[in-house]
Amino acid sequence: MPPGPRFLLEHLHYIAVPLSLPFLAAFVSRRFFDVSIPTWALVPLVFLSIPLSFLAYVVWRKVSWMRSAAAHGAKLPRETNRKDAQTTDSQNRYPRDFLFKLCEKYGYTFVINLFFMKRFFTVEPDHIKAILATEFNSFEKGPTFRSQMRSLLGVGVFNADGDMWKFHRSMARPFFSKDRIGHFDIFDRHAQDALRQMRTRMKSGYAVDWQDLVSRFTLDSATEFLFGRDVRSLSAGLPYPPDSQLARLQMAKPEAADEFASAFLSAQTVSAKRGRFQGLWALQEFWTDKVQLRKAAIDKFINPILLDAIQKKNENEKGEDDGKVSEEDTLLSQLLKVTDDYNIIHDETLNILLAGRDTTACTLTFAIYRLAEHPDILKRLREEILDVVGPTRRPSYDDVRNMKFLRAVINETLRLYPPVPVNVRCAIKDTVLTSKTPGETPLFVPAGMRCIYSVFVMHRRKDLWGPDALKFDPDRFLDERVQKYLTPNPFIFLPFNAGPRICLGQQFAYNEMSFMLVRLLQQVSAIEFCPEVAPASIPPPGYTDSPGSDGTDRVWMSSHLTMYAKGGLWVKMTEAPAEE
Image 1 (cartoon, helix red, strand yellow):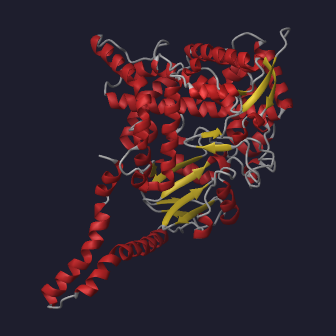
Image 2 (image 1 turned 180 degrees about the vertical axis):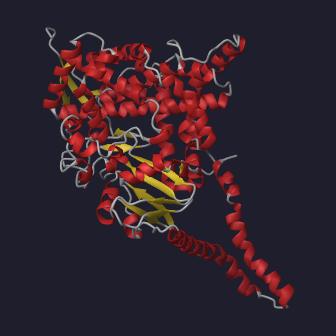
Image 3 (image 1 turned 45 degrees about the vertical axis):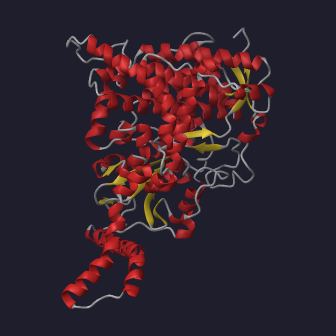
């Protein structure tokens, strides 16, 4: 059934019940009191029944919340006024600019009051800790989020709650709990391909869209890691700068290898746009599910692989598998040891693919942007890499662990550019969040309220990270600031989430990002940021006039489900001297 009619059927009682009340009142008055309500009075009552019922519900909800809060010895968070809340993010403004401004006015925890919809919002580490960890059983993704993302993520781990989430988590955990040398084989194969294409393009004098390159690298790596077969997105070649003649020829003849990547990006973008309409998104896509239209190209790749793997498993079933993860296993083969339910396997692999591709590509994109803007940090990082692995040797697990400054650069990138800038939960029962200030009344979160938290905003708070919080400085993860800020309050840094739903692929992501940066800087000695070759990537005037910016940002940040650089990240790189 199309989204719109399904939505109306599921919510028909919200219309039918108020409309029936005037007729019920007319029947009761005539039947028991012998009083007839005239038509001229009944008609306006019918028309007013829905807004009056909604108004009565809003009043009842507020009174109910206040009574429940008092019963718990707590209070409702401060509410924004409607005018402030209606100032939403503009595409021409700094990311989450309005949230930074709301925090300046209302503090770090408040209720966003928008068109009768109330959303709990926080960037307070203690409250986020409660939502993600200490009060984990009081919160879930919630029905609104699941409805918004079901077309793309199905019942996969990122869109599941309760027992279904536990089941998905238990299926994937064994595969991610083991460091495997095979991961580095995959990374190296695709990194060498990507960097070879980059060198060839730059020898022709063209800038390279590094974001596009690493998105292809991570997509090919992730699909091989998941399925044992990659989508070969790198085989389509790299794009030329938009203002070149070759770019126009390239757009006129799109490569088939780009079909999967384009569909994947488009499906994410449409899914993210649904968030603007909250639970009413189905009315905007009334007759056609726009995500399903784009999933055809995704499933064209995934479905044959899944069906082939299930068939081979059924043909070779011997009942002697001990369930352990071997070096040759893919995630798909691991899932098949647990279940042969096609839909579960399909949704789980697609969920992991989303995480494995976008979050890593985001971090690699903004890491190179910052290294281009800070040649002193780039020089220092190259020196560490060359000291540890030299100019050609492939890095090992031990090498990656021993490069402390490399990890600090990655962490600082994750701090300023967390791949998932905003996340959401829904309270499934009344919950009290204690205040960090002794003696202050705790805050009450009623059951059913959606709770939004932003690590993007929290990671840039000066009271949590120091007066230089907006500055890119990897040393904050190495010097005395670690003990001053991070050690006593580890929940101020949450690029991979926390609690029971912490990212299973965290170490995999660190390894992949580290490997690519090592391989790149073994070959490159300087990076130049060239936004002028792609005017659509240059932020508009006034972009950095935000409490979240230090005024030096030259990349145009945007987001769908994850963050990305709008218009790409165009760079030129200097190849390292051969004698190194």
